[in-house]
Length: 522
Ligand code: NOJ
Image (tube, rainbow, N blue to C red; front, side):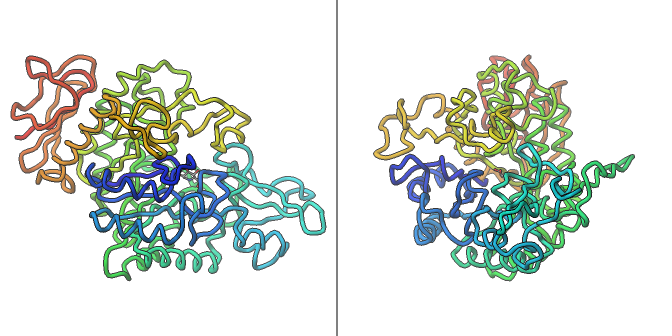
């Protein structure tokens, strides 16, 4: 299981109210005790923090707020000593506008080698219209016009995210070399791999055609030929990175963050000579309904099997609404990725929490790897009532305050006690974590312990079992079955045998109640 650490809000070691490397170091034993195999740390590089650190100003440094390179090296060694691997976040699609490369590009002017590392273009018409109709992921257009050194309005640069995140041009060999240097730097420091940010976005279609010119194919396997998402040309980059990782004696791995259209497109990223794994966001987006879940699982298993890669499962991350709050809403209303997608729908958090517990056991029973986002193991819900003036997600400003964004899943982690800062910052509140959190934690601990010990769990295959309507059941060899009830009524398990663990109590007839999962020994 890989555990995501959103560094700013995981644990604060120096008492400045912001999470840091010292805080993470102090909590490594907790992670090892939970049953984590590897931690993925979100960007910890020097950054103006215009997008939570995904605006990197120095690829081979550490943000002073988080610590130092020496502290990072020490933390990695400590993690290795207790059996944890360490993965970093590589952000290759863009840099911060404060990165020296971009500053030099601004100074050097049109046509320069410095500008060729980014995507600078002249405007349309007399130059005052953006070069094309692309839009930023956070709202508004994806182009910003610069003021040239003579004070006149000049070229435009592309930013698929905030204006503070200029996109790099991956046809430029200096860009490629810089990222290879960066990967080697961190690998040499002991890092075991990278999660690749926006892995589906690096290559832009030649000529930067308008979105309005998109080609949609028809029939089976139909897809959109998008000018900047999931272009076939990205795969050549990943083949070269794989060769770099494989040049190390001990294995170094890559995880793709690729929001693409369906499991077959995703599987292309994990072909044998490309990346090792990719987040399975279709599973995350599937509603809490038996058929949708089963379809999503079956499609992912099939697509991964075709390329010989292990599937992975994820229920949330720092960009998505926490699953407790997602499952608390009416299901099947359309894809739910962020709080803003469901903020107006009624929520029953106790139902959400029950479903999230069941989803955890479902996820941990499936073949392949699993990702847990910090706080998921505590059953945390999204914080939906943050005051406007504390919102930091660039989406809030860029959407003209229409979208509240992702801050509700990025608040400091509560570690202990009943009052702020809940053990997040020193000296650390005393006392036990609240009972509810502890019971979810106990479920994760037991589930992960069983998953390690049981020969049927982890990598492998599954066999679907006949299940009552609205339930899902599968067996894994040797001797394991998982049953999940998605309905509001109890169901009898299709097989009767010893119970290993359940996400909630079974009823007196041994039936699986609403929104409950159970593992059985066959
Ligand atoms: C995906 C990251 O997870 C997200 O937090 C970030 O805003 C974008 N990529 C841009 O880097």
